[in-house]
Image 1 (cartoon, rainbow, N blue to C red):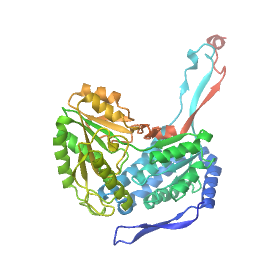
Image 2: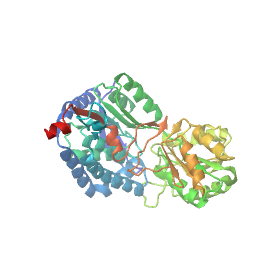
Image 3: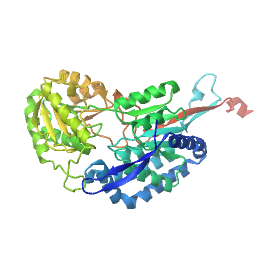
Length: 473
């Protein structure tokens, strides 16, 4: 049973409270869903130009607030300030990019003239909204992923009910406010704040026509179970225990810089981080030494400090879980080569090496924190076997100076995408981003999210065209 109350969002120690949000009770959730469902058709009936213009106006409203929002995001999420500013910049850019994408999204004219019996028909398709989309947002990229989902859904003519992350909802709420001030009706873009119970109630509501969730695999399974009787579209971006394959001919300077970037973003709390470094045994020790040097060079501290590269994890409980996972890996035979200092929500960047391929962290145990995990293997076949031995498959990477060899592995890796000689934590908006296996369903990205949150309808005019004989007569 949902009960209405407020939750306080605490700031860093000594800085006081950042704000509060009202949690949705059952009545508030029902009212929000009812309003969105009721008004969606009117919103869809507007010219796409008007819907797109609202996104552009929201971007213009957010621009003067960018520095303030970056500071707010850093304070509530623990994301280092430089990364927080980049997320706000990306959020504003995505609003405008989705507006442009929406303006040019269209259907297709179908080739009926080439088929016997339909020569004189005219058939075309158009993209139509799904209806009411529930958007469940994670804590690690709350502003950017809200826009990734909601902006695409809105410009396509959907109504949206957003559940922001309860750990850090304030920046997401500011983005919602800008969209409403920019011209999106408040009934069309609703918000329900709350924890897992609120999210479960939202996705179980039969009036919701589609769900877009970024979160854990367990959450995705729950959404799929609730949606099964409704047979409604799902977009699920779930866990990832990404495999980074380092072959015996890899450039370790490149590997070190790319793996460090890909693993340490958002304090190691990114779905697509390089969590399993599967390295040829002959290069294991040298790469371990290089990553230890990287770990030692990091500055662990308050997110607002310009020199900080690793801020606090989202909660002290999350940090405790990382510490327990590393301890379990050691019990499985891994060696803790560096790290695991830090108190409360802070975790010192950590390197664990000589991880047995059968250890939990080498398969499905996803460490959501700044931990480099090195798994030594004897050759390409074993590297591929270990990589594909996980039930996750979000992104992957291969490092090798032999591009043909890398291509062979890339084509056989079970992942939504593979990067050669670069970090697998790779998500420019122009690529279709998403996983396979237990890493999810669907693809996000410019145009791809709109495609996932619309349906293609075919319209046919029978015998509309005149034959050549009829025209001559």
